[in-house]
Image (cartoon, rainbow, N blue to C red; front, side):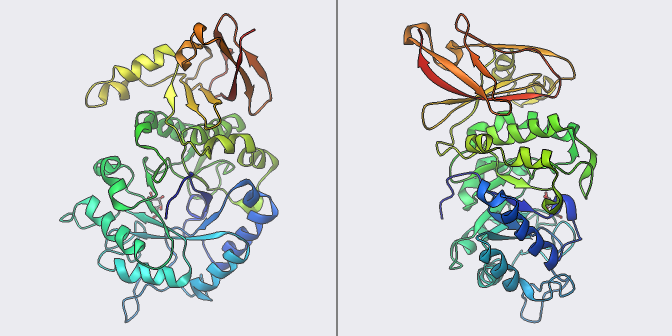
Length: 395
Ligand code: GLA
């Protein structure tokens, strides 16, 4: 199974935690279709932790909690499939899941077989309560090889939060995405700290196995399990734009049965999703010089980088059709003025080329002036712009 684009879907955890059941999954699957989310590319419906009983059955199999899932998981999977969607479930590399339900350690082959029989298409695999005598890479290899031999294509979503240098070994395990952050919360502080921490991991993100910046909080508005303060519309746009540009999987975490228009506008911006799903999956890079210098000069142990947060990076990514995606992200609490040169994007004067930019939230057009792009004069705090730039002849 090869995964060419960042996976997209919806996951129960951010909003519902323990409050999951068959009805919720069925209603959410219906909404995925009715609202247009499915047609916008969202595909997986993932049941996170707390779906099973606390004990395995006499044959060692995991048992869905009959109070929550009275018809079992095959029934849920069949319903999800009937809607043209795919079904994801959760387990853990440890003895127990993070919420204390049975983990898959030493049951990897039986669980992979069970998931395949149920019609599972996606497994999120957590890292709590694991055996410290077995290295992290081997714990993930154990499930990776079991899934690859279970007779069904199951996307393997490794969730060890980037710990134990996950990025170095995760592609060995057969994982198709790996959590490169700790858990997200529905607040600006969380988006900022996760976002800033990811810029140095871009060389690890590629087709086959994507950096997973954790599930989206867009539209949570302070409600639900990880709902804290909530975020403004501008901050949710920033979050969605950054996750999209950096090629993270886009897994929705709000209650999709009750989305307002603002939330739909963000989650279904086709132009932004297109940047995320670009088949080239190329490595994004920082273009503006001060921010770039901060990154290039970081110390060997990353501490310099951590202590010197990026205020307002301009991040570019070459797209497969020759266009360039360019995002400006004002992480700071003040206004910023942002300008970049065409040279920094690989377009010196001698090329005879320039760029024509279209902002993907507002439609605003920007042209280069004296081979400079002025991407915001007194650019508001916590705001972002995401452009698609076309290469054209300089007149
Ligand atoms: C960990 C993961 C979360 C969620 C919970 C479930 O914290 O990082 O995404 O799956 O476990 O208990």
